[in-house]
Image (tube, rainbow, N blue to C red; front, side, top):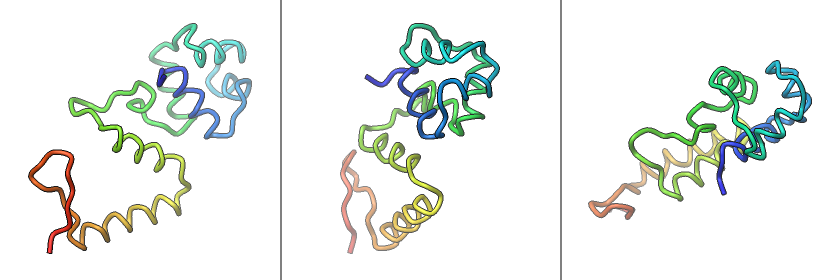
Length: 119
């Protein structure tokens, strides 16, 4: 299940921080507070969510699992998650490859969810 707590935990781990280190960086009493958030026993206040995003280098949209009125498909979400796990060089390579595919004519067809190569 993809919950707020699981996204906080994943972002913390991706940032290479222990719960105690994150607690200090965002000004909470102890790692127990972070643990409660990560296990969904409690939820951070809005001001703590902003601090979490800044410290962990993620967007509020990611933590809150909100992407606006258009929901991401599972394939799109998978791509976003993979992109976020890459270092900057990997992200640049993926962007360049994506642009290459578009230049080669891989564009969406009229059918939703279908992609085809144009001649």
